[in-house]
Image (cartoon, rainbow over all chains, first blue to last red; front, side, top):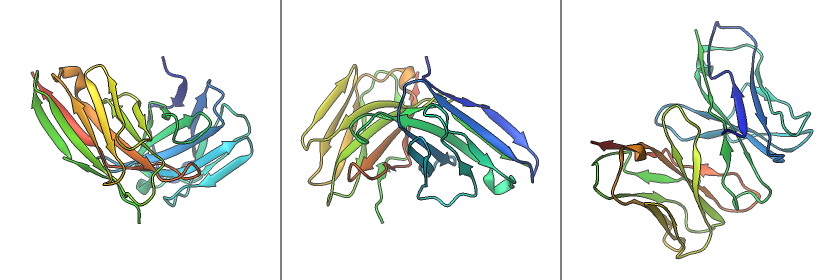
Length: 114
Length: 112
């Protein structure tokens, strides 16, 4: 049973729309991450958070923004979606001591912008 | 630029056969290496977190070894079953304050 939940699973939207991808975890993890992944390619970190009110950009430039008002919730927002945003977005969390424990992933949101 | 290479990119294996694939990472600094299994339409699932040179970890028919001095890890699957079909990802971390650096994965397809 998943301890980290992403919604929606699939989303097709028009260019210019504002969207929010939801991610929630029930494990009390301080560290949370958003990854973007295109088929056959590596996961690229776009945002991460080490706790409430802490957010950082990852190594892949992204036009999205995130917020972390509550430990369990880490939504990602695109103010104006474009076809270049079409991708799979994965949310993950980890226990203290990055690298000592595996990450727990959500099931992903596959976004298509038309 | 830090790079993690996984080979082969894809692999077809007959059911019942054993197989292995490789993850290569920079050997200059090392903190940990992760292996994940990602089945289609599911979430990536952590298999192993390896930290010590010479480490060998096992989970059922799947095992992994680690050589930090030469910068590689092998994942072995013994007696492949259809449920082993998945993409296997490795990720390297060079310091506890750094993020995971991911390989592109090895896509394993088990032929019945």
